[in-house]
Length: 93
Image (tube, rainbow, N blue to C red):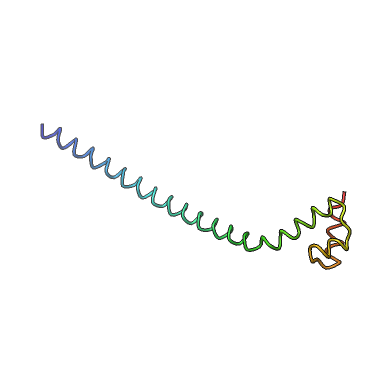
């Protein structure tokens, strides 16, 4: 009976070691995921900060696709002539 209890005790110790090792691994994985989420949030904030400028170019490209002239691009999107010409040459059909 004592041998059985000692064997059971040893088995329980091994299981606790495995559980402990698993929880350490999970803790590390959670830290990695938290870091990834933080970086993703920072990247998203950077994209949002850049959005107003990009919207003008997106609008300008749509205007070019609809047949806008250089002068219309310059007036509506407040682009310098060189940028308007570049967009027109890159995106016209």
